[in-house]
Length: 423
Image (cartoon, rainbow, N blue to C red; front, side):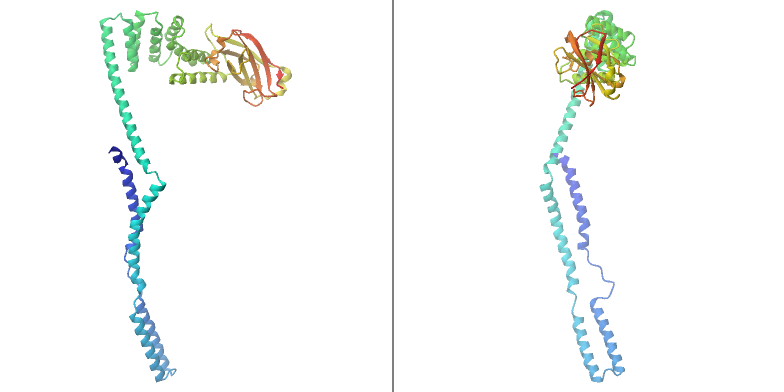
């Protein structure tokens, strides 16, 4: 019934359009022809014969016709006049009748033709399907709103219970922590910071409390992690290097300070804990790619403060003097870290232009192509620097290349020279 009501406007509009077409086409066919403003055929014939009769009289007076000829001509003229005056105009009389017949035919044919064309060339079920889809979408939205309302009620009930719990036992650090998270769910960050402060006072060595407290303080300070918030985050990571909130905020703090490689490192650590295929995994992957891209804009860049135990290789890439004339300044330079066995997928990669050489570089896990295929899984690797004459990373004959094998992970004084031409 609701679907029928929904499609009713479509059929009403269709009928109105059809009525407008008929109103435009039919009136001229049903309208009675207007009275002629000129002489009709009978009057015109009489006028012609009258002129001819005057001409006969003039000819008779002038002696061109004798009395006998005049009588014969007059008799013949009167006979023709009588014959023509008695005949009507059948064409004019039948025209209105034919027009009305055509109009009645169009009244029947046009709607039938329009409906037939719609049934053949159109999609009669589309309107119903669309109406049903719209109705289903409205029903889904209604259910979502109802679910959200129930969730709000549940959060309110849980919030009231937790508030009562901390009033009954102010030393219950776990209840203070739950209460802080409930406040965050209601976007009450000031209350969340107070609750986390009470939880931290009771449980000062709990990483999740420390990182949660740091987040609440940072949000209330305009999302500024500097000062006490980042100190709490670092303390949390010392106690638990895999604390998710601490890893996330460490990456955000590094990103805000333009330490893009460090940001990518922390977010990569968090990415390992995130289920693949989840929205959070996709978002984190995008954040890591963004950090890498920004790191590439400053030649090769560097971690600018990666943790001491991070897997890092740093050094300088140079172009051999005798090859300087064999490439253009704008040619792309790629640097890859590959496994010692020469696997096709690089462990990490960077990119710059030839006119930036010589340039310092730093490779770490934040630049990994895959979070499960990183430098920290290896003791030594192979470094490849290549000047691409075509702009892509695929090796081609004529590219300039330098290879350094057996590079220890953690080494910081690497010198890689591009000194050969690929055959």
